[in-house]
Length: 385
Image (cartoon, rainbow, N blue to C red; front, side, top):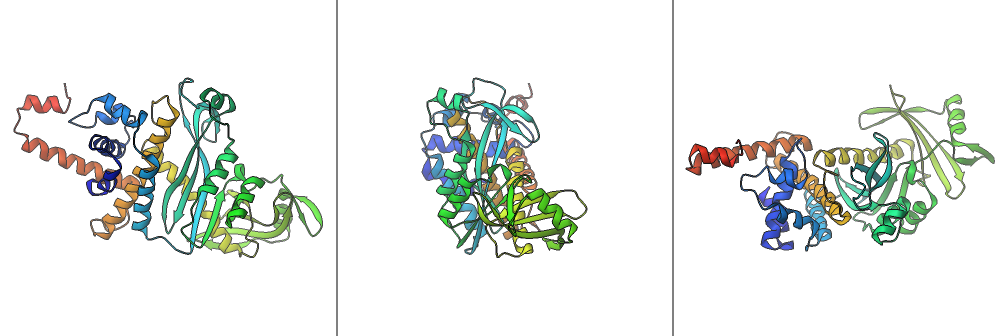
C-alpha cells in the first residue's frame, strides 16, 4: 500500500501523514476485528500515543475533501472512465450508535435493524466503467439535534438535492438512480436543471394517467399482467420478466413506468423514469446499476463504516470518508494486481483485504527474524503477556 498512500503525502505534515497511513492500513488489516482507533492502534507493533491518533480525526488540520478527491481521481484514472455514460446513485445508510450524547444521533429506520438510535448518512455513489466511489456524504440529523448543534436543519431530500447539485459530470450523459424514498418532485427538478436522466423506484399507490384514465400504479401493473404485456429480457446473463408503459404522473410529468421481476423470484420492482424513448432492455440495464450502492456499503461496513466512538459529528464524517477512501484504494490495488499479473483474475474486495493481511504477516515474520532481540522482548512486542 505504501506506493498508493504516497499519493496523498502532500496533503499532510509528516506526523499527520504517519497517522493517515496507520489509519488506512488499520482499517484494511483489521479484517473482521473492530475498526475504532484504539483497536486499530493495537494492530501495530510500534504503537503510537492514542491521543495523537484521536486528534488526527477529532482536531483535523488537514483537508478531508481534498484527500477524498485525490482518492476519487486515483481510482477513476486506474479504471479509465467512460466518457459517454456515468451513474450517480443516491441512497442513505444507517449506522447504529449506542450513546444519545453523540452529536447528530437520532432514531432512524433501517430495513434490517428497524428503528434504532443511529447516524444516518445520505450519500451519492459515482459509478463509471465498473468503478464505484462515493461522490459525497452528508450526515442527517433531526430538527432537535441540528438545533442543539446550532446548524440549519435539512431533510434527507434536501441533502440529496445538495449532492446532485454538487456533482461535476465526467461523461456526456449522467443517469441518477434512487429508491422509492427519494422519488419526489424536488429531486426530479434538480436533475432536470442539471440535464441529468433519472430512474427511481416508485410505490404502487402513486396516481398516474394513461389514455385519459386515472389509475393507481399497482392497478396498472395488474392490467399489464392480464394483457400479457410482460416479456423476457436478458441483462448481464440474468433473465427478467419486464414491461413498460408511458404515463403522466402529477408533479412529475410524462414518464415511463417499468415493471421488472427476476425469473424464479418474487422480487418485483416498480420504476419510473424520464427516459420515455428508451427500450425495456436498455432501461432495465441502467436501473440494475443501483445494486452497486448495496455492494459498496457491504464492503464499506466490512472495513468499519460506522465503527467509531467519537462524539463529534465532524469526526464521524471524517472516519466515514476515510473508510470510503480505503475502499477506493483496495479497488485500485486489485486492478493493479491483475494488471501486473500477480493475480489471475479481478479479486473481490474481501479477497484483496486477505491478500494485504497475508503481506502484513510476511512483513511481521521478516521483522522478527531480523530483530536480533531476545525472545522475551519479542513476546513483549507482540503483546502476548
